[in-house]
Length: 281
Image 1 (cartoon, rainbow, N blue to C red):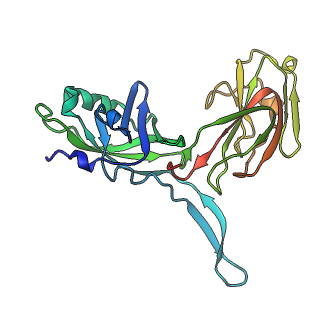
Image 2: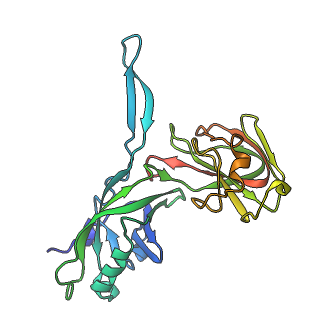
Image 3: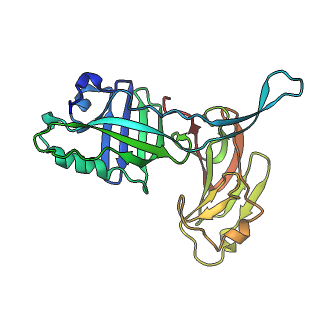
């Protein structure tokens, strides 16, 4: 099998990093000195599938001209990442690099792909392995080999850098048009909770009203449909002592990109994470 040449490497003004547990691979970088030190490098065509194609539901207009959008879905998206594994200049056995590379991928756990622009913009997504090139029969004596990794992103979108707010805040989200950011509220349980939402709703909850022990921070999921589900960590376990107290009070929040919303908070922090259709920010 022919070893891919360096002229076939992916080139762009972005740094692309894959991380899973202790495994971290900078598979693409615009900086030559960093490129020379990487054991796995992205090949041309390796970012195919990075852009999201939503399912858009349309209906005919009443006046018979054209159609109108009546709904959208963002199903999982995916692609095939093409890389070359190994670099003889590193003087590291190819078998060792291959083992580390394969440990970075799993069909059951997330591999975080981060795409950072040279001017500071960045996005990240959670990939799961769908398929992977088998290990070549004999790695001994090989300098490198090409590897394809088919992946899927179950979230259906890319995410941006989270921003946090407290006190009286004007919030402007920079999600792609048509998308709403991930919104959550983090309550410091040593303090009383007091929050006024953009629609004027106000929720107050004195710390003394809580029964039983509470985690140091309670996370309220403000995604539509989650009804402010309280957990002891992001994506953590339900705080059952609080769930009945907040049912019917906490509701989902959808923010419109680039349109300001106004909040007033005490004892808590608002976290807003943009959603994107592609990582090229």
